Picture 1 (cartoon, one colour):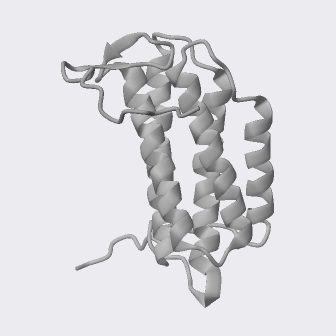
Picture 2: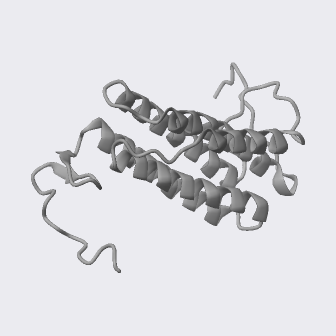
Length: 183
């Protein structure tokens, strides 16, 4: 059974949009802002995946992340639905520990640069932080699954570590902040 038979509906032409439960809300409602930020993050993960096809293990993890982000969008699109579990964040913590084990200890701040894949990963990390802020803002007025908030917090951490890994692949290096640089 097709989910979408018609792409345009004209129902949003007056500044509202429909949630999956049929309720209509303003297009600038905090729930819609959070959904948009999750959608943007998921799109950036797709861009990241296209930039690092050689890394099968990272690609598999990023594919799982894309599915979880779609699940989080489902939670927001159907208020009172919960999909995220504590295990989601625990899995990310395991990935962080595994990926971080072979990296040198941080002594300087890392700039969002290096390889193209690393830069895309840093971009995704920064959008993840924005998505997390949007979901927190929504949670100030409406119930939000606390596991979703925890997941987004860990996701930005795993993206940071993945960016470090990607920056060091194939003999490349991380770009570190140099204070007092003169131009």
